[in-house]
Image 1 (cartoon, rainbow, N blue to C red):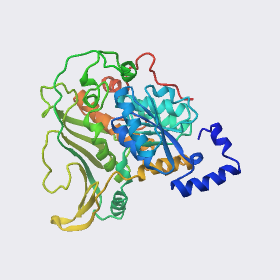
Image 2: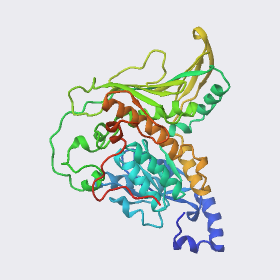
Image 3: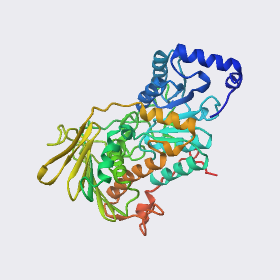
Image 4: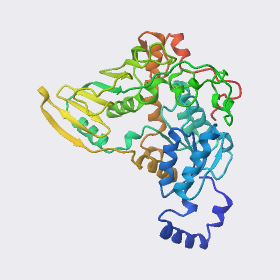
Length: 431
């Protein structure tokens, strides 16, 4: 963890006395033992900032947002929560040189996730990166390489892994409760609003639009390529499969320790968003093929209802030859032949601090193996989302080589494994 003069001063006997007093008065770790985190982004970043600020062993030291109208209010809000207002900056690159910043939490649009993560690792910062960890497969693998090469702690934002009932369910599967697993299904079923076409307009005051674009191609400012709406544009987002679907994809992959598949296919369409400005599909059925198992993802962004027999809109079903297991963020249920009920766990899940505390703990221990969602796990789950999008965009079944993470003999598909990075925003070289 980077050291500053203040901390060096506290290494003496006075620091020991101060530590005891701080622990008694504030109920947390002394300032010299806290992890200083800078949060990038004020959308999902507002939730991350709140969670990290609530941890006794963490400080939110800075809020970074290219939009001053969002960044400064979030800094003020965290200041009200903690009594210590973090600074607001618009350019995260200034944080990389600061010795008082131990880690960055990346909650930007998707096209900045991997570049910011990689740059953070190169600069010696630990990183919490929101899902998906990348905008394409190649940069996701480079983020893993950067974390390992520079010895950084990088946690992925698939925070459902922090709910303990998932691990309990996987133990049942390992013990053969539902027999040999033949198929896994991840379901992303919800209602999304329409994205009506909007005209280009001048860049709003207080927005560093050039930095917002970053590695993406230069183009005029448009509200459909800005806050939230960027999710549905290929240049910046990954559609709902990479936005929310990656949570369910991660759960089903985690259940059986699946890595890269050997093939992928996709049927997709714009049904609920037909005729609007959205580029990504709102409806998808993706199939990833493994040696003795099929993994299926269903997405329906036009629904107003829960499916019969399901407790939530988004969940996973794991099918074995002796029964099946339905699992969501609030528990799981097992069913045997002819629907005979088996074990049931019901526990209302909230955004548990365990995921964020785990990140702080691993920063202190330097043990990335203890992370709940290490960057490589995030890479594989994000990879499946990217593969689904590539199969949709090419319109055909694609064979995939897990060893090279490329498509054998498919030039068009391989071009979608990476992107052209705008001059001045190229990815740094590792090593």
